[in-house]
Length: 112
Length: 113
Image 1 (cartoon, each protein chain N blue to C red):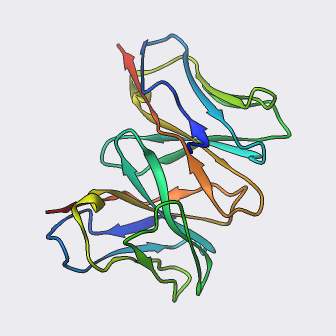
Image 2: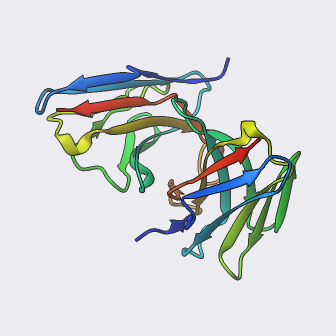
């Protein structure tokens, strides 16, 4: 049972435009969500997170939106740059579980 | 520099030959965890440790062992590797779930022939 789902395996976007990566979850106990970026031959690196008490969190070009009623979060990258080309994972955690559950990832390609 | 160090980066072995992948962190984190990444399946948790001598199973623990004798080290042990354990492995650490950020190592690509 995939508790965290990223339904788009890949996404291509033109440089300078907005990239929107989506993530859905099924466990209503999740209350903290993270996005990670992964380049080939490297480990995932933390990008941005959001707590369930918020519906939006911004960090420079990256914004994460959380819709708790829809159990959906999205990562917006504006403007997209070629260096953003990577695999993006969303992850979720719930109090008391000692686990982070990851999605299957979305490969973003930003075209110059 | 704060980091999680895994060794080796690449490993080719044969079925049944015991191996250990080491993981060390220098951030004094209490929580450490192992993940495997497979195409189409994302990152799946193998084992985690909340502190020294405290470990528990993740979602795919079969065929793996771990130990946490020191805070900084969390080795992953494959007693009798099989081809279905061919995968990309990541070690990670954090101050603690659910609100800590996970820091990942660079990964170990394991091939079991």
